[in-house]
Image 1 (cartoon, one colour):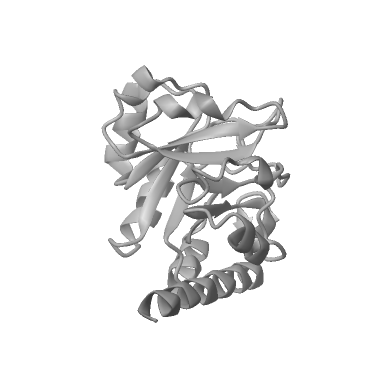
Image 2: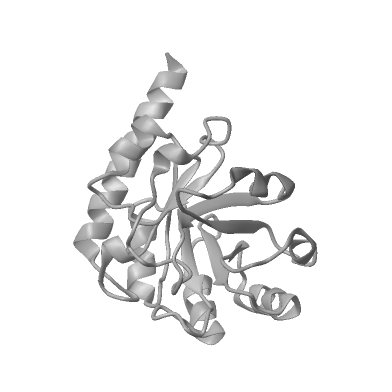
Length: 211
C-alpha cells in the first residue's frame, strides 16, 4: 500500500516525509485552496528531494496547457485532477494522471470505467471543497473489483489506516488534514506516526509474499 502526503508547502515537511519513507508528496496549485503553493516554491522543494520520491501536482478545472506548463516547470512526476475533468481533457495532459472522484451513497461507480489511462482516487463528495475536508465516505461502498487499484482519500488518519488496509487493501492512501497543525503546515509527530504504520504494513506484505 502506497502513501502520499498532500498539501506540502514547507521544505522541512517534505524532507521529513522522505526520511520516513513516503511514496509521494503533493503540491496543491488550486488558488482557492488553503494549502495553495506557488510553482516557484514548489519547484524549490521538488528540486531538493530524491528523484525516486514522486512529486504530484493537484489541479482543479485548470486549463490543460497550464497544467502541462506547471508540471514541466516544477518537475512533477504526475498530476492529480480534482475537478470535472473529462477523458478528453486527460488525453491532453503530458504527465501521468490521478483522477479524483467525490463519493457519496448515491455515487455511480460505473462512471470511472471510461477513465482507462489514469489512476483513480476516491474522496468524499463535498459541495464546497475539492478535497482536504478531513471527512470520509463509506469505504465499504467501493466495489471489490477495483479496491486494490484505487487510492483512498478523505478522513484517512493514523487511527484508521490499519482498518482500511484490512477491509479494503487499496493501492494507496492520500492524507493531508489529519497530519497538520494548520492547513499547509504539517505536524511532524503525526507524519512520523502515520508513516511508521504504513511501513509496518508494507513490511508485513513483503514478508507474506516471501513465504
